[in-house]
Amino acid sequence: MKTKLLFNTIALIGLCLLPFLGQSQTVNTGELYVTPNTQFSTVGEFQNLASGTFINDGEAFIYNHFSNEGTVDFTDGEEGLTRFQGTAVQQLSGGNISYFYDVLFDNTSSTTASFELSSEVSIGNEVNFREGIVKNDDFGGLMIFENNADHTGTYDGSHVDGQVQKDGDDTFQFPIGDGGFFRYATISAPDNTDDVFTAKYFFENPDTNYPLSNRTGVIELIDDQEYWIVTRDSGNSTVLLTLSWEEGTTTPQEIVNNPLTSIHIVRWDETLQLWVDEGGAVNPANKTVTTPLRLDDYGVFTLARVNESIILPGDVIIYNGVTPNGDGKNDYFIIENIQNLANNHVQIFNRWGVEVFETSDYDTNGNVFDGYSEGRLTINQSNRLPTGTYYYILTYDYDNNGTTERIKKAGYLYLTTE
Image 1: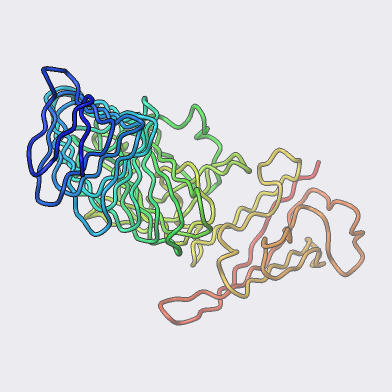
Image 2 (image 1 turned 180 degrees about the vertical axis):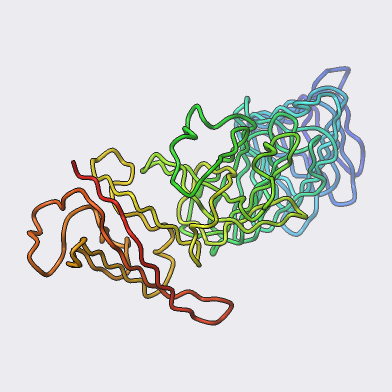
């Protein structure tokens, strides 16, 4: 192919292309093709204009700013490597998405943002985070990992400070951090290759936007120094979520005290305006917590300590206070995670033993107890039940390592309708 550089045409055959005629920029307005086993480098800023096509199937060295308004891509089946290596902050900009196969980030010029990403870059195979933080948080850019793409080398000194998108059906650890700290989140493999998830880490107190005092009863203490936002942007897959911690830097010591089994992942429920428990399987060696149940809802997550004594098998949690006043808090009898368990059945009786509510597959289609009677006997179904103490019986099947156990729980709930 031919290369047009500042209106001059050069054949690129394994040579090193530098700024032309003393100019501070390398500008591509035509076709620039780095063939396999060849190298291309630019000391000044590289601009790929709207009419430009830059195909890298070899090895490209970018020592300065990089801007793409045209086409940046690689050939399927080839393994081009693009090296962003500088001694000053490098800006990655432009209005068009840039498609790279392999990328190296290696720049120690800043401890907060060696690379300012204001455009979209797509990774087809692997990113090597050697040195330098790629910051898109303040610049509006996005790093996208395509199906089966991955990364190496992530640590406090090299990661993405901002949003990262993952396309595809493979397990993925998001290389994210904030404030000079690498704090990843991991999702299990989605069901479909066209599923899209996005994650971002915040080293800041979530309380301003997501009040920590608004939490369900099982949650005793919430991490007030950090949180993650993980969203499902396309598809309907459910995944397991893993969050990392690091005491002494980003995670409060109170969260990671013994027993470690009390550390769970919690999620801000937009509908309830409450932090809710999503469970916790703790790996002390890796300093991670994983949701044991596949998530249906996504959004804001962080770590917390819970009262394990009130958690039933299957991570079922019963909230026995019901205040159906329309404030979005405990408006019905909440039994967390019961929807995930087979053959569940709920009965509620008043203090005289009269059944006022009964249903199977609780909380799957609006069939919840919200203070109205659905009993078969003398209670008027059109009237709200009086304030008082009621008695519930919950039964469900629980798979305990291949053996099905029938769990039965009876207790009291407290209804306030006045």
